[in-house]
Structure formats: C-alpha cells, structure tokens
Amino acid sequence: MKRCLFIADIMKQRGRFTLLAAVWCGFAVLAPGTSSGKESIITSPHNLSASGGSGKHGIKFDEVRVCVFCHAPHNARPKDTIPAPLWSRDLPSDTKEYTMYHSTTFDTAVTLKSDKPTGASRLCLSCHDGTIALNSYRGRVIVPGGDDIGPASNAPTDDMGPASYMPTDTRYPTWNPRLGGGAGNDFSDNHPISFSYTAGLAAIAQLALPSALPPQIRLELGESLQCISCHDPHNNEFGNFLVMDNNQSGSPLCMACHNGIDWRTSGHYPLQAQDLDGSRTFGCMNCHYTHNAPAPDRLLHSPKGVDNCITSACHNNGTAPVSANVQPVFAMIYRHPVSFYAGDHDAKEVLPAQKLHVECVDCHNPHQANRTNVPLSFPPAINGTLKGVRGVSKDTKAAVIATAEYEICFKCHSGVNAASFRGTPPETPPNRMQAEPDEMRRFDSLNTTSYHPVTAQRRGNGASLLGSYRTDMQRVYCSDCHNSDQSSKATGGTGSNGPHGSQYEHILIAGYDMPVPVTQSPTYQPVFDFNNRYALCFRCHDSNYVMGSSSGFYNSATSTAEHTKHVQERGIPCFACHDPHGVTGMPATVSSHLINFSKDYAYSLALPNPTYIPTATGGSCTVVCHSTGNKTETYTR
Image (cartoon, rainbow, N blue to C red; front, side, top):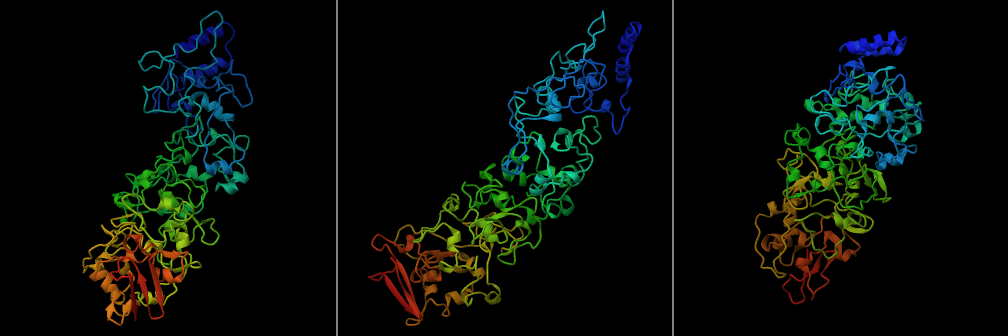
C-alpha cells in the first residue's frame, strides 16, 4: 500500500496521476472479502498478487496489482483474430500443432471443429497450457525518470527460491491447472472446446438446443463452445470458476448441455438411485472427468472399463442392493473376462464385433440402464438393465438397438469372428462333428433342424418339460442357461443376474458335466448323481420323463430306457451326443433331437462320420463307442 501511494504521489507530482493510478491503487487497497458481483476476483485463486494466494495452489507473487496477471491498461498484447481485452500475456503460437479431443461419436457428430484452440480458450491457455510462466505478463508501467515498478521479482512469496513459476511445477503436486499434455498441446484428455455448438449438432448428439441453454452458459459469438462456456474466470462462487454449481445431485452444469436419452430414468441418475450412498450421488462426475482424464475418449476415470464400474462405491462388495454387486462373480474361474481389456469397446464399432474384447458397456448402456423388470422374465424381450444397448438383428444381420437379449449376445457370438469369442482358458469348446461357432446360424429356425427356442418358438409339444413349462415355455433366454450360479435366478441364489461369471464352465447357471475321456475307448463308470451332474438340464426338463420309458430314446424290445443306460449306467455325459444350442447345415437324419456328436466320444479315423438316423418308431446310432462290430445300435419304441 505504501508503495502504491508512493508511486501515485510521484505520478501526481509529475502531472501524470491518471485513471491508471487510481485503478492501480484500487487494486492494492481492496481487502480480501470485498466483493464485486457474486464473488470478487480478490478472494479467488486467480488473485496471484501479494494479497492473494488462496485456493489449492497457494501461490502469490511480489506484485501489488491483481488484474495485471491477465490485463494491462497500457502496453497490452496487440489484438489479433480473437478478442483480447487489454491482454497482458503472450498467447500460444499460431503455428503450434495441437491434438484436440476426439472420439468416434464426437468426430462423426461434430462437423465444425477446430484443430487447435481458438477464441477465448487461447486466452485461458496463456496460463493453462503449461508453457508460459504465471508471472510472465506485459503491461509493466515505467515511471518517467524512475525504475521499472513491475514485479519486484519472479519468485513466488513462498520462500522456496526464485523461479519462473510454471503450472507444472512439481513443488505443487496437489494443484494442476495445466491442460494440454507435457508439451502443452495435447487436449485429447479434456472436454472438447473450440467447436461449433449448433442446432444441427444438438439434434444428433443428444444435446440441448443452443437456444435452450441457460444464460450462464455462453457460446462465443453465439456459436462456439469455449472454456468460458463452463468457467467464469472472474467468479469462483461455485469453485473451479464454474458458471453453475455442479456439485449438486445430478451434475446440473453437465446436464444443461447434455440431454441424454432416458438418462433421467436411468438407475445411475442420482434421483433414481435412492439406495446409493452419498459418495455416488453426483451423476456424471462419478464416471467422467472434464479435464486430464486418464481415459481420453469419453473422459472416463480409468482406461480399463471395468474399473469405472467396480470401484470402492460402485458394483463391488459394498454395493446395495446385493443384486448390483458383480465384483465376486467376475472373480470366478469362468467369466466374461472384462478385466483383460482397456478401451477396446467403441460405441461406433462395426457389429458383429471384429476385435476381440468384452467390457461392461458391451452389454450395458450406463446412461439408460435401470431396474425395470429385473430379472429377465419375458423372453426374448430385454429388461431395464439391457436398455439402449446395440446388438445384431437375426433378420437383417445389421446393428440395431437391441429389443431381444440374444441380439446383444450376437454382437460377439455371431459373424465371421465368432470363433474368437468362444471362451478363454481354462475353457475349451466342445470338439463336435459340426463345429459351427456362429450362434446366429445355430439358432436359425429356418436352417436348423433342432434348436433350443431362443430366436424362435419351440417346435415340439414340450412333453419332456416340467409341468408348468409345457405350456408357458415357448421361448427361452440365453441367460436362462448362461448366468451366474449365485444369481437370483439360480437355485438358492441372491446375487446379480446375467452371464458375468460362474463356477461352472461356459458361465452356466448350474452343473453340466462335460468330461473328456482320457482314451477314445473309455472304461465307463456308473453315475448315480446324474441329477446334480446335469442340474442345468433338469432345471427345465423332467428327469423322470427323460430317464424313463416315456422318452423317445427307449427300446421296447429290451425294455431299456436308453438315457438311463447311457447316462446313469455307462456315465456318458449329455454333451457327448447333444449340442444344446442347435445344429445347422446338416440333414435331419443327422441333427434331429439336438444330435451333434462329440468327436471325443463318437468319432475315429476308422469311423469318420458317426451318424444318428431317426425313424417314426425309434432310430439307430453308428458311433465308435458302441461295442458291436459295425458300431451300429438300433432301438424301437
């Protein structure tokens, strides 16, 4: 203050006491707490003068003026193509190359975007790109005949020695206002700026119309979204110089622009998530960062998708309700291996998938998922947890927003790359005579002799089904079989539903024994616990019917129930003969009754084409495991 008055006195004596001197002194005498508007710059982190030093960084310089760190009443930076209101700082070079934010959804939606920051954002970057020292500014006033009365030194007044202070200075690890990577030119991990926010963009990108934005959000020249659209550098009322309070439930600043389909009815929207604890009530910021995001595309907290879902507060062991806790099942031996992949999923990827991966967002749309109709109960219709997910139509073979559960499964388990998605070690796909990895083809009712009714109604009368299922079960879900053995749909289970993970191979909801014989001519051992070994089958099928005389696999000539003879007395597993999904591309004489022999049981070099031939009253099988000379056994009901 004395210094200011001294300078003012000199200038007055020399007839040069002007508005500048008055403003200069005004800056010096303003005390912290003095407010102009909602909140004064004096009390904000942008006050780097001797009277400042607030905020996370705690930085202040030996400089009595406040506004001079950005503005200069004289000797300001020449105005160029952008508004530069008496700007006291150098700007990033016009020739500097930048990496701006991009993602497939952003790049395809935004047609008017810049390859470098423009407009007011360049002014912000004269501090925040990490290449220009905070105390490097123009507008110093030279008193005629006197000394330079600008900053007394370039050292912050923190007793840590002189330095040209840069925002990347490691002395202040808790404060990082730097945007733009190590060289100050990589903005790919920051919210996009310097693009045209138009009505056309809003219509295709789930954004609010420009005319509907609240007055706090300013578009430069009425069109460009810039740093100042979200930040007011003169007002820190809401922290981080935000123009609105974004700490309220639901992230209102984010939602002022982002108008996502069904977000307000999503289970992740805080007002719909009454069972969430306080740490998970801030909506967008639970998953996204606006600046310096570890996962640049879509600004996620973690490059590994599962780490955005299973955190200390979300979908882990502390999650309520228990049906939302998926962490334990993803630790099972047999699981969708979501922890293997980081950033491989893309919202615009070609379907069926071409790149091997599986991530939570392949099956769930976090902006639309909700708890409606949980668990799945009206096959093939999806429920709320699968809402808004892309899949593949069995009819058009094209990508669609899934309305049937199997369409979501087909995004990976169909097409030319389906074999790549057939499980990870220790799983091994069955060694079948007809080894078709494309599940869309296996369930194709028009080209498949027999199938489980996933994509079409069942063909038979359901005589083998349990009582109520004979009329009610016309269709089934993939997840009726492929599901967590701890899920609420499993016997005695209470956990999360869905094919997340299971103790049983192929992520099955119950036991389905699939032993491979040590030799091709095994010594058969009786199995008396077949109800447990094949509990998966007997969730729907009546074991008394299947194993008894009512089954089509019965030999009246010897009064032999052939299923009992094979499964119970000889210990031959169900999968040795049956392919539970469906058999395609083969004549009815080979593939009726889901017959698709395992080579490990039925095939040999001497018998390369094992066959099953059904008749009106029975049938015959020619397989290597039969002991007769020609390997053929016939049965008649």
